[in-house]
Length: 485
Image (cartoon, rainbow, N blue to C red; front, side, top):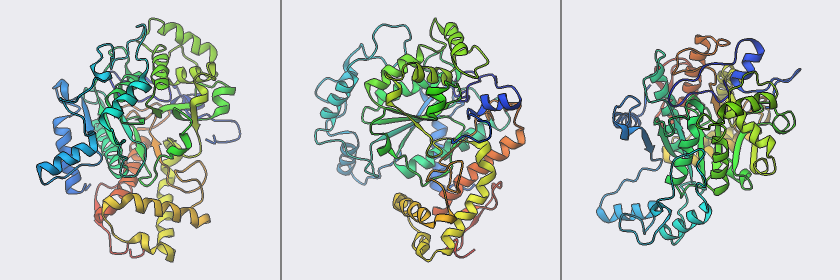
């Protein structure tokens, strides 16, 4: 199976990685180069209530078809009057929106389809101009920035509609979802969680493409759409996407230029997490990507092409990751020049390289905050709404500590900074059986440890933390934590 192997929709994908080193490479999508490693519960009452209410109306298990897609608003608005409500809506969705809005937009064009229709001639054209026209109509004074003053980002994730086969799988999916809800709430990102199969033939890891494409049309005000696999955990709640790095690019993927463009290795990147700009280039790219998938009449031929072209690919299945490597390396001028292969931080870190270090990372952060007189202001208790300012101050302080917390912000294979995203590729929490190179215990403990590690960063705003790294119990934090223990 491809490194982007979570089967978020439809049927669970079968493991193809095999055992031993070759199997490990196939499963986690990290390239092992000889002689080196690649550079490569207490919820707060309100948070619990919000998540449970939303899930009650939009459960994975709900038989109602309209509840397969759930949008979590990152910046809920509290209003006290009709006029205040109207002002809040105007600020959020534009002063000229609504059923009676004047002017026709792409939404009124019957030829514009949300669906991925492989083999259909045409598709959406002129998207950049259509999107700009919609923005001018709905936001004549310009689009309001998010709370962080950044380009708007919509995160898309999802899982299969039927209940998980694996014991405890649905509970794990809930915890993975809570992690994403927490991150999005803290960073002003809107989360779209989908378990509807939008293109019946695009199963498993291919299902992400129709979901991302539909999100672009449903959110023309978003500059970026961010796909995150269901089994990926945000393990640094302070880190924000460095969007300024990607101003000249349309696609961001975790990977390595040498392995993709030079060696054409099928594990030169990982497609489980990617950031894609809402523009015509991206729609065209996803159409090309989808034409290599199971909805295409040439699906079998593409499997043979990928097997014969890409280094290390042992099967003849056309998977999303191999197809992505092929498109970038075969058409570098068309697609590769606008793609940023991010290896400067853990845009998604392979869990085996991460989880055994999390306890030490947490201890180092506590020690740096406890010992430094300059960090005393960071220990002040504060409202969660102030998270962005405290996160920026904590990251600046971490960078200044030098030897205490070396490494890049967002983590990496060297240093002791928190990893931004930890991806549990190969563990198959919903399917119930991890790839044979991993034990159930190692996956279960790893997921629990990473989720608690992240949750402690959130619970601190509520005055609690987990009793220990693998415990569901929490304990209250003393005043001036961690100086006082």
